[in-house]
Length: 381
Ligand SMILES: [Fe+2]
Ligand SMILES: [Fe+2]
Image (cartoon, rainbow, N blue to C red; front, side, top):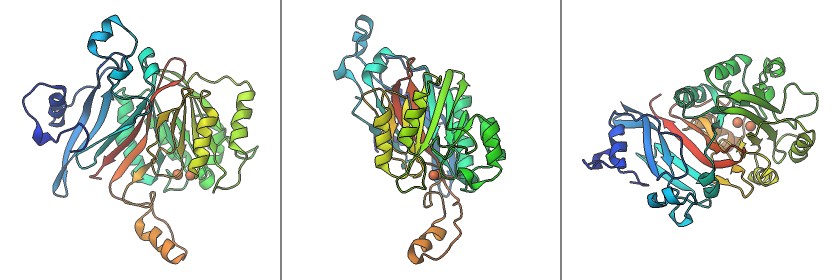
């Protein structure tokens, strides 16, 4: 066993929270728990559990939510301030929970002071690069139901690899938006599908990096209305180990200097290869935006944290697509390329898929309360 979860076989009759959770794993899914409140104790719940058998083994698919302990119960009524010693997690602590052969991973970082004094006003799932039809399947089976169940208020999705790994078509973009995505972001694959160019000019819910050359179709930021209020999403692209583009740091500074009206909650997506460039952007925007998260590498990093100014940060969200692959493409087509350097056509892989991203909770002032890594697998596809 890894983490605080015991396997289902270890269940007993004690009516504990753990017992309730295990009961839910055996076909009695709990409803989604209420929003977190500053004084609640820590607990975990598995919701909407699906049990399936395949390839000689039983698999569970679930969304696991956690609630943090902020103060001992006796202190809650009389003293609204947080006892730091009682914190289940601290701002500097990230904790991974894995169970059932690594089917689930739940990780998060919290700003304890802000969590004690702010109720979350918006929960946003920011999804890493969708790759091909496997990525679309993971999005539709995991992210969309989360929004339909009210577990998240907004859904922001990197869609630069949606069409067979190469960009996104206007039709596929409409599919993602109609399914529940609030904003689509792009990246270096923006121009792979030619019919997207006119679409970028007419659909305000899809953005491309703001530091592309002036005059390019589309926009680098947008504001949308969600059930929890307005949300601004921005994107920039890096220059280290990437194709030439304008300076992303000066581009975002110039945008802020224009005096445009943004929503209180601002998500910044930094689409870049180099971790250093993404980390630098996090510090550059700390205190000015709600979150800075990276995309493009398709490999999720484990450095989620709340920066001192209140900005949630994660170097890379990861990928939403086939896991037995080389960042989404088949091993059989990528590996020979490395071994021989001969030309090859890279195919999108098949098999088990995963949705990767981050869940960001914001307070009423737009500063982040928490950031949680999301990594959920579907085996039997
Ligand atoms: Fe990319
Ligand atoms: Fe990508």
